[in-house]
Image (cartoon, rainbow, N blue to C red; front, side):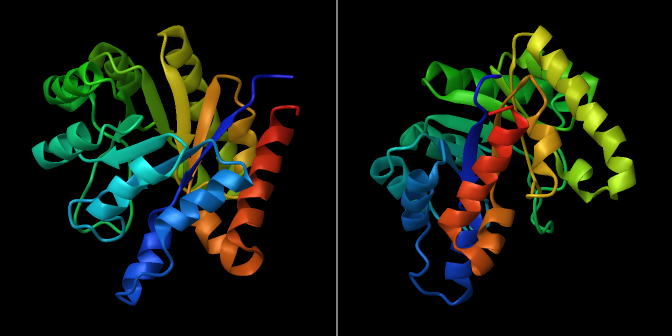
Amino acid sequence: MRKRLRLGVNIDHVATLRNARGADFPDPVAAAHLAASAGADGITAHLREDRRHIRDDDIARLRHEVALPLNLEMAVTEEMLAIALNIRPHAVCLVPEGRAERTTEGGLDVRGNLKEISRFAGILGAAGVRVSLFIDPDPDQVAAAAAVGAPVIELHTGTYCAAPPPSRGRELGFLAAASSQASRLGLECHAGHGLSFETVGPVAAIAAMTELNIGHFLVAQSVFTGFAAAIWNMRKLMDAARGG
């Protein structure tokens, strides 16, 4: 049996539901506690510049009230760097961000912004924060991530998930090749974006993967089955894909 694959649960869209009514419920921190009890290995939250879902007080509470490691997704901006250095989460995942996008639409261009991303990775790493870079499964971007010196990459699985089933094999091949390249370069490889019960198995089966971060699907599925059951079923599918 291969090494157990970690599951990071993204609780952004619990905050989206809360903010839709301008109320205090549902509480994303309560969701994080529930995720921990259901088998999550970590909590992921994206503090966007426009605060459309997760807010600053959510991040502070997640950091201090939840026992699981916190993975803070953030744009490469001075504001977010200052917040990360103040909060000191377990990990920071640097992601691209656009105000007009509904959700993250692709990977970070590490190759085209090598100097600035290297600076951020160096500052965060020196502060004891594990840095990951959210990138497309492109060999040039993987090589650039290694040059930056960040210890982790997270591969964008959105294109794979959005592809019609007959075309997914090609996209899965890109993910597998990028994860193998990352392993050869000494990088830990994670993946996420758009994964569901239908699409998670083949990605979980990739030997070099060590962690999947999944959010929107789990929150949406919870409408039908409950949040804990959605997480538990995702965990079961991931374990089955690893031969567990």
